[in-house]
Length: 227
Ligand code: G3P
Image (tube, rainbow, N blue to C red; front, side):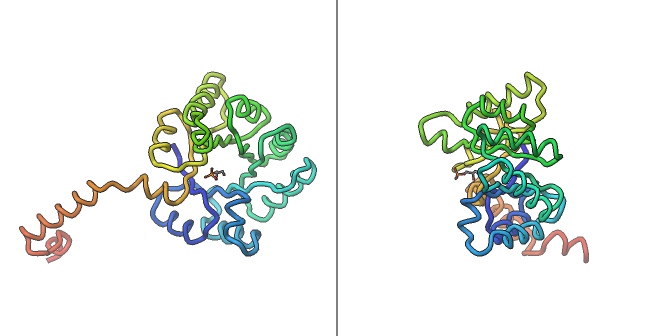
């Protein structure tokens, strides 16, 4: 399962890109609003930070089909290749998805909560569908089961649209989504860090260092090799 970072915070993106194997950044109107300032400048700064080869997903804010298409074209013109347009699922969303796909613009259908929505989005031409895992879990539904249903449906019918699972609150949800066949997932910075962290890892590294230093007087292997 390939991973994105789900934030518009430049410092979090800089740190994420430095340390983590990420294929891109996903944003949405809420994430951009949290950063304040000029969202156009923020998006340009994100693109400059991640380079042209990583993906950047940006959601339309217009609600009428023609304006959504115009807005999407302007976003891609500004941010260049590997920019995907997030379109909220719905009747207009499907219409816009088909129009953007016909223009060769990649679409991520967002605000997906059922496999039925995902199937329609895929057939309309979406490159990705984004089911919201934690928001389903929050209402005592099963976000992982929805991801599994979508992934199984796509596989069964040779649909090459990928699941881009979103809305995570825990590392456990991420692994369960991976095991359910999710192709990609976008994680907030704290969940990304949580996926890496384990207390036994720190303890193991500390004991390796202590044993080595006790035996070899604090000299590293590099220093010994270079003598
Ligand atoms: O883009 C959708 C995703 O960011 C939603 O996450 O945490 O607001 O449910 P959350």
